Amino acid sequence: MFVQLHATLALLAVLHYVAAAPTPLDLPDFDINVGVGETTDEEPKALSQEDITSKLVRPALFSRAVYCSSGAVEDWKCGESCDALPNVKVLTAGGDDGLIPNFFVAHDVDQNQIVVAHQGTNPKNLLSDLNDLKFNQVDANRTVLPTAGDDVKMHDGFADTQERTADIVLSTVKSALKSTGSKKILVTGHSLGAAIASIDAMMLKTKLDSDIDLTAVVFGLPRVGNQAWADLVDSTLGDSFTHVTNQDDPVPRVPPQFLQFQHPSNEVHITAVDSSGKIATAQLCPGQENSNCAAGNSILDASVTNHRGPYFNNISMGNKFCTA
Image (tube, rainbow, N blue to C red; front, side, top):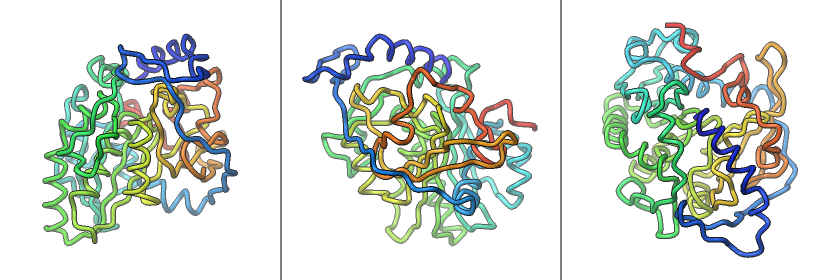
């Protein structure tokens, strides 16, 4: 992801004023057009510390845990995240920390919910970076997303990466729901893992029984698809989908909106984190691409540190935070 960040920042510098073009410009190398999707400047609303604790901390702990090795995850001995969530039974874990980023499906016994988590990019792994470097848009895979129309276009690399684990995730979740009697699913991930988790959430929502309560909370989400994709997420998941952005993190700004990529609604934007890394000030951002939130950030102020964290409760993401 960090190799991709530098490439993207350079691209943005070169193409910055293309976004102001009066008509779409064809970019055959990217298989997309230049244009701008929906935006809003509606005033955000403050998010309480209680909401951060009750709705965001647990998903963030799972998103951090999945960065650790499959062995550590299977034994649930991954350091602070595993210690904070002691009553978790891992049902499957895999990935090669590269073309198949690490993932797991687990039963969170205390919440009686099934958890699906996907790892973000390991910056030390070139194969993993290559998943992110593609900017091509492709048709949605109808096997994965049966409700997607012909107008839904998705980031090539993200779609391909999600498809590599789609079957095992779906089958394990189905089996887990049956064996545990749970009716709840949490899907989460950070960075590239957030993109995969977003597609997983859509897949599970459309393929499982309607009485299953699915929640998706993702962190540092890059743009996954076009306007039609964002609208499909909104109509399918609604308020059960939340994407958390942290201050001047540049990843939510890529791929660029002017290359016809678009975020769905329900952004929570962290505006500040105190020096301890524990207390965050955050706001709910109405609509898609709210200019008062991540969409309004200047690329000149981009902070890769904000992408890693801390987000809140001193939770930062990445392999280096695995202590076991």
